[in-house]
Structure formats: structure tokens, C-alpha cells
Length: 235
Length: 316
Image (cartoon, rainbow over all chains, first blue to last red; front, side, top):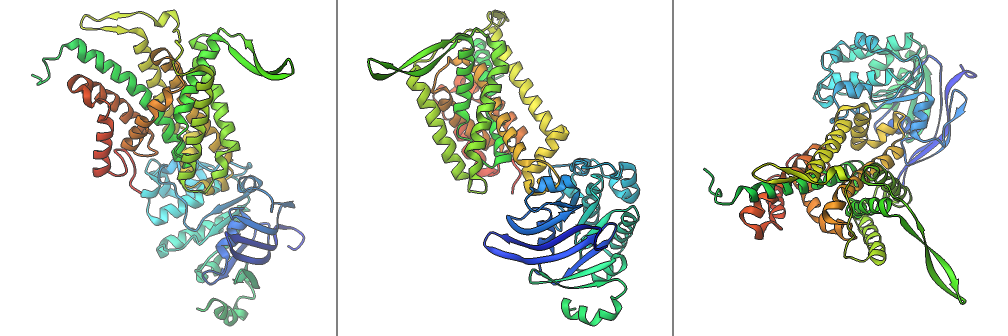
């Protein structure tokens, strides 16, 4: 994995206005992996994803994706390079219907899922194509937010708390979706509070605190480190 | 049947058709303002000035343009001018004028308006107000305030006697042309892929950019589009109101009232309230002419009291 990292983040620092949020984040994600960022609220997980995507006011350090340095790129160039974000707030557009929401992100490379495949994963969406995007239920909105970045062909998907506020049956559906995406060869960087959910699908974990990565585990070493993890997350 | 039937029908139809003409200009201008406000969050006070520039551009295309340049006369600096001849009529102007003025608008946006990103809308209003004053002042200095006549192509002159009134062909043309542009713009924004991206970028520009869309470029093009529609209106207005440096300033205050009535940023609202208020003004001119200058503002006050976000605005 070390030499073939798809995404390598080194000493990533970022700021919102005057507040310094990330204080040097280091981690990497290998091709085809599902990697989860864990940590308490305010540890900097969401900011890490936004900083990789280029959505913060100021950032320094290094973000290398497929060998290409992205730290000086704008967020649209980063998307075109093949990184797609499903934001925590889902970002479904109220003035667009479901179809328009789904078709909004332009394809960035071949290999994205076709509409037929997307509707196979999320049958609910097909029935609601002409509804206003924000009229969908929370679960459907989450599916739409994920579905919309699958079309683009971006090989790295960053999902920010996809299970937040959803019913168990829908969480299960999203878990299955992520497993299918992994089987299709997508690489997934996940931020998740729901540790139980993450533990079923992730290959590796990084733990964040105060804008830094403070520890890392593989799925295999998870059991042995459970106590430490409880300490970190305060659960 | 009608209380006001004792007014002759000629008066009715004359004022209503004029009202429809004014409404066409209100609709075109408030439409551009709505598009710009939605995307740039800027109240474009320069809108009247670019409308006027559109008319001047048409006039230059027809009559040629004097390019001033400095010369030395007996050791003193003076201004001379070279005449750049041009004889392109209104059909050309309807395309070229919005194009040139649109490009001018995009340059303004790139060099000046863009620097106001993230600031309160009041700064944009002040900057565009200043720009409008400069543009208007320069043209007033060069061409005075009396106005220049602008001739329409032969096909559009003349008119039809409908029995109850004489309807000039040019009025029909203005109403048809403005409806086409209004409908086309509405369609492009509400029913196309490009329009969906534009609406999304209006809601959440950061996220749309993070999907790989060049939002800053889109903002520039949107400003260019809004300004080009105003220039188109200016070309249409040139034969009716003459080409005058103050023509935009006279109109823009009413247009802002129209935008407020329709609902800031609402495309459909600005189109419908544009035509509607033109007609209401026409009706007022028949029934109680003294009120025709203020009726739009009275309606604005009532709408603001009852629906602060405008007739078609989304309450936020």
C-alpha cells in the first residue's frame, strides 16, 4: 500500500478565517481501500475532507492524488482530477428536482455508474425523479447525495457521515451500497460517528483529535485496541 | 358595464399598448437584475447605464463612432477625433449591441465587481451606482442631454389601422421581441442543464464548484448575460425614447420597484410583474393620469407590507 497510495495527505493545515483548524494532518489511502476517519465532534474530520476537496479559505501542506499535487488547485480542478465529496449536510438543491440534482456534477472520467446501475442501487430515486430535491425523506436525500457523485466516475469518494440521523434499515442499505462500491473498485474515505457502522465496512481507521491524526488501526487490530479507541472517542 | 367606460376606446387601447411597451422594458430589465442578483448577490445599479449603453451602441453602429485622440496643436495638447464609419442598422444592432455591452459588463465584473466577493450587497450597490454615474457622465459630456433620434428599419415603420385604434408596427415588434427574449431566458434557466447548474450555483456556489464546475467563470457569464439583456432592451428602446444618456437613470428606479414587487431573484416573478406593472401604469394613465408616476411605488409599498419577499419570492 505504501508505495501505491492513491491519496497521500502530508502536513495538511487549514484555516476558516482566523481560526486554525487543521494542524498538520498526515495519512494515506490506498487504491480500493475503505478508510474511516474517527474522532469526536470538532476534531477536524469534516474539515479534513473539505480541505482535500479545496473548499476551505486557506490550506497548506500537501495533498497528492494519483501522483498529482493538488494543494494549489481550485476545488473544481480537484473534482476534475477525480475526487468527489458527499457533504455532511448532503447539499441537495431545493431549486432542482431529483433528476437535475442527480445530473448536476459533470462526469470527470469514464467508468462512472450509469443511471440503470444507480437505480438498481437506489430504486427509490427512480420513482421520485421529478420531485423537488428537498422534498425527499432524509434517507432518500442521502441516497441522492451519494448517487450523484457515482455518476462522475471519480475514483475517490469522500463520504461525510452518510448515516447521520437515518433509520437503521436505511443505514443498512447505505452500508451495502458502500460494500458494492468497494467491490466495483471505488476508493472510499469515510467520516463516521457511527463506529458500529464503520467497523463493518472499513479496512483501516485513523483517529483524529484537535486537528491532527493521533492514531491508526487496521480492521484486524481493531479488537485488540478497543479500549484505547473508547478512550479516544469518549464512548 | 364598466364604470370607466366613458373614456373613449382609443384612449384605452392607446394607453394599454403603451403600457405593454413599457412593461416589455420593465420585464427585460428586471429579468436581468434578477439573474444577476441571484448569482452575484449584487444589486446592479449600473443596469440603467448598460441599457443606455445598448441604445448608444446601436446608434454608433448606425451612424459611426468618433474616436477621440490627443494631438499637439502649436505645442498644446488638444483632442481631435477620427470618424470610424459604420452603417449597420437595427437588425445588426439587436445582436451586436448586446454582444459588445455584454463583453464590457464581463470586463467590469472581472476587474471590479469580483473584488466585492463575500462583502455585504450594499458595497456592490455603491460600486455599480458609481459606475453608472461615470458612464452616464461621460456620454452626457460627449453627446449632451437632448437625445439623438434613431431610425428604425423600413419594415418596422408604419402600422395597422385596427378600426378602434392605430397600432404602429414597431410596438408589435417590441412586444414580440421582448417576449421571445424573456421566454428564452426563463426557459434556459428553468428547463435546461445549464440553467440547473446556474440555479444550483445560486444556492450553494461552493458545493457546485467542488463538483468540478468553474463557478467564477459562470458568474462572469451570468453578469454578461444580464447586462446583454439590458442592452437588448436599450436597442429596442432607442427609436421610441431617442438615444439619451439619461434614459437609463429615468427608468431604473421604476425597474427596481418592479423587482421588489416580483421578488428579488425570481425570474418568473420579474417577467410577470414587469408586464403587469406596465399595463397597470397604462390603466392609471387613463383613469387618473396624475397617479401614473407613483402607482408602481404604491403597489410596491402594499406588496412589501403584505408579502415582504415579493409576489413570487421565496421567503428566506
